[in-house]
Amino acid sequence: MSQYDIEPLLSKASILAKYSDLPQGDKIMAEYVWIDGHNHLRSKTMTLDKKPTDISELRIWNFDGSSTGQAPGENSDTLLKPVAMYRDPFRRGDNIIVLAATYAADGSPNVFNYRESCAKLMEKYADEDVWFGIEQEYTMLDYFDRPYGWPKGGFPGPQGPYYCACLYAGIKISGINAEVMPSQWEYQVGPCNGIEMGDQLWMSRFFLHRIAEDFGVKISFHPKPLQGDWNGAGCHTNVSTKATRADGGMAVIESLMEKFAKRHAEHIAVYGEENEKRLTGRHETGSIDKFTWGVANRGASVRIPRSVAISGKGYFEDRRPASSIDPYQVTGVIMETMYEC
Figure (cartoon, one colour):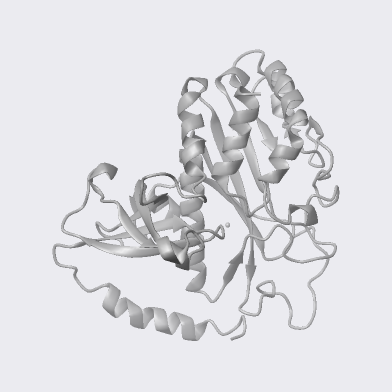
């Protein structure tokens, strides 16, 4: 299939609509979504007798963890515990999509459940009122893994001059924009408080994949999808606290930068696989080997917006996270560095 053959896909979508638009009677569909052992998303659907009004009304489900890289075959039952629910922008009506965290049969968190430890940190320091906002960059590919819309057998001109399912569902989308490399885009989620940041970013990714399929497009979260003189893709993470937003907050941010510098290696360890291909010191990135920060400096590890320096308070932007990050790990290590180091 070429990138220009989307008409058959749209035709199939219209055929599918004949069935998806049929009345469901008095039943509700709840699609459970979870993160597998490969940092990918999985889902399956349960039929309910009525629409739940609270997350506590949804039952814990199970799945075969051996097929998702999350459990051995001889002990494969893995539990899905609902942690957040959203309006379903695909089935619509009273149907819902449920974000679930994974646990072993004995109730302990699955080894790939990074949400558990992150949630504990967020709860422990809830009084600090930490806000996060993540800028999710991604690259659109055709079914041959070539950037969508690029000329066949060639390249577009050099980069430089060149995005409401989430809102329907209740995701806090704060903006969208095209990125520097053609076929690369970005949307922003937040500001979110605490664990909500990771929950909403993961669900937004699920929606993005689902919608892209309708148009014959693949979504890549690889931090350097195309080698050469092209920008990589990141997940710039914006952070503010009650103290940084108050008068004198710039001094607080400067003290936090000292902490971040000491734990650069610990951050890089969870800031995305193959991030070394992106953090080269070129294409608006800092070097993966050295922590730097500066006002209005997009070539630094952390950028302090000019407006923050002028007002003396506000937020900072950690530019190191790759587009493929697990947001629970990133927000978790940031909380550790700020309050436990």
